[in-house]
Image 1 (cartoon, helix red, strand yellow):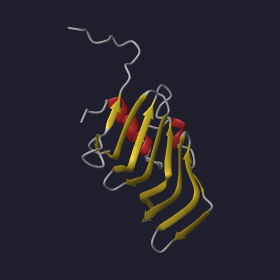
Image 2 (cartoon, helix red, strand yellow; image 1 turned 120 degrees about the horizontal axis):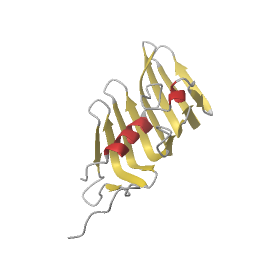
Image 3 (cartoon, helix red, strand yellow; image 1 turned 30 degrees about the vertical axis):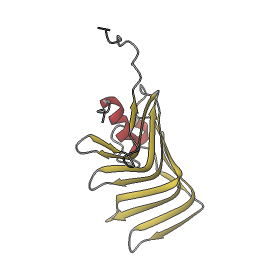
Image 4 (cartoon, rainbow, N blue to C red; image 1 turned 90 degrees about the vertical axis):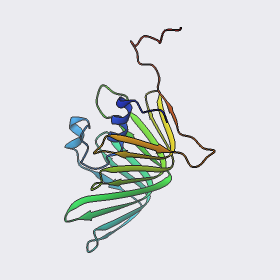
Length: 174
């Protein structure tokens, strides 16, 4: 596995933090309200589980997630975890004003606050500028700042494409 570009890894993590925990968001994003739209929803105040279905859209500032369905778990008034599914789930996010927008797609996205992990599964694709990262399962450990990816099996592989940055000199030929 090729180690991920640290710049892309941070952007990847930032993309997937879907609630006000966005540490590297545009400054104005953190003060924006979280908006959620869906065709139907159910909130169980006893269990703290809310389920939203049908053209689900979650947005906060520059961050936008779309899914067919999303389940959000709240405990003691705090966001615990979220699962979103779709054909596909899409993510769009601008981490800072000087970096390109990040776009991602995956059939399933899970985010767990306690373990500080984000998992995209079923075939994930993330793009920032011209950099592209794909794999069947992509896990980002926010505490350790580690990206792990794996393929679906022996015949499948992860792929990571990093374009040369402007101003970097090309490698010398022997």
